Length: 429
Image 1 (cartoon, rainbow, N blue to C red):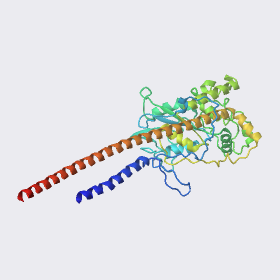
Image 2 (image 1 turned 90 degrees about the horizontal axis):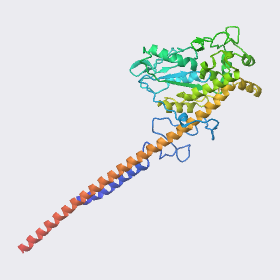
Image 3 (image 1 turned 90 degrees about the vertical axis):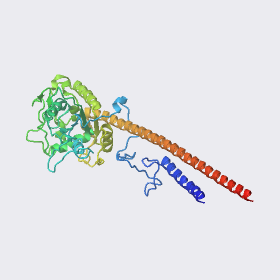
Image 4 (image 1 turned 135 degrees about the horizontal axis):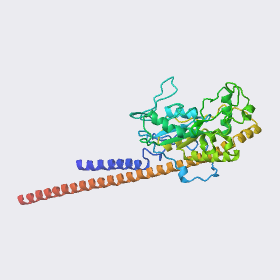
């Protein structure tokens, strides 16, 4: 009776285990294979149990259905991954161009990254201490970590010659013994919006007149960069006057700050023709931007976050927010004025078109890479579960075979005992 009960109990237990293993095979806990009913998103609703951010296809910025292909980019240009060694000597250098959303992005760098040793930002202080784990050395060179150590809004020409010297001095390392990797990053913005935003900023009293404009070891002279105003600042300047100043550094600012100015004689405008100077500056800015470890676009905040995380292998704590209600967006201008601004910033317009296409193609490439990685991970998980499944059934069959063997032995002993008892009865009769 007990043997029959054990057999009956074995069957439902084996069935339950089989269903559990089958469910884990079809619907693993760490995958998106199975979805549960949602209240607002139709029959099924996606979810993710991992710690990584999920970027749905209908994010806050729309990816164009067809990305323009004006420029030829290689796979090396698209595949951006940096093995950033925060424990070693690697340094991330943020090139902050005025009115590109750099202040917001700079705060993300010091306050919003998941780090083993987060930056120490004291209330009331403008700068944060961003030390490496276990070492009193900074891994970040930016306005909010090291301050304007190479000058106010230092450009590519200034930073590349200044940052290594400043960082070695801060960390007390000799140039001969210091083998650092400097990873330059920046933010760009639509040229017309950026220009209008700078105009409004200058109209409120901003000047940036303490900027050094260093090039080839010397600052720009007054003759090379004459001021656009005679007083202390340019407060209240009308847009027409702002556009009419030929030495206004707002014109093509993004190209100038990303190019190697040494190639065109720095700020000496007489070294070559204006057309040739513009061609050299634009080519240099494109090359430097393409070789940078990372750059983002103000108009694509979530994609900027995604590409930064994929490039450096770091994760932000909070998602970036796309804010379209800026001062520049609220300014109403005529088509004629827009054309005038685009003409004054023709180099920036060309650079932004180049940067936008490269940015979106990098985003598309990284999403494809991520999908391939996820498919590979799911395939490996399926293979692992299949191996566990086969191992389980092999053990289950082995246990069943052993139980059958034991039952055969018991039946044989019972038959022997019955035969012996019958024989003894015959002899007695």
